[in-house]
Length: 282
Figure 1: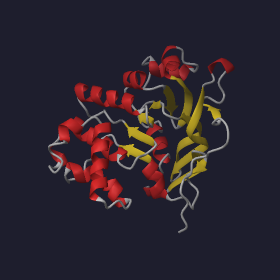
Figure 2: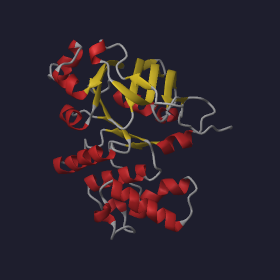
Figure 3: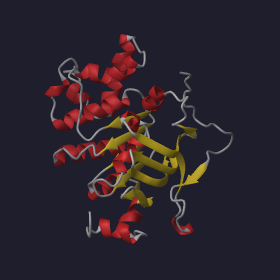
């Protein structure tokens, strides 16, 4: 199959600026450079429609949180952004998903290249039953890196970025399974960072962790957004309020409202959003 690497759009002059909330009143329109965008996105599992006409712009180097009740489509939408739904039999997608202006569902696109640039961290920490070093070096090795010195540098840099180097530097060749849950999740974040992504998808990354580990993950997210575009699914509205810049509320497969987090939580535009945030349902 012919492959096509994803290229950044580099036009002369200032970067194109798009709105995060397309249909919002003028006073509420948010202006950011867009990293990932979807237009009229529909997703079906067989005959069941899981996403309905979702149009959303994800801003660069911000934390965007998806909230909504269980089964509302937020994790399904997240997985469309690096084509994780490709592995599900009977999954059909229509509409448009673009990364730096490139259609990621183009049949010619190199999915391996896409997933190199759009990393993912799952709800349950899933380190490989290998050493800490092998976990972090896995992605670069799969992508063809063979130089041991270079791999050592990538491992150290990734573990430092994930704020877990001090806990691992003397145990690099020990099993990753000997870590606590919170440490394993930060190791999984380091593994995602090792391929030098531009976007990091996080599907409820702290839902299985204790409060102290959760706080460390949230602190890490705050630091990582200086270099990466981060998209997080969370069932915890307090967490969304703490870590995100933009919040999007999903309900029964539809994007109900999106806006700056401080506005969404203090002055939501839609009654459904207000009802969910105030605990009237969900």
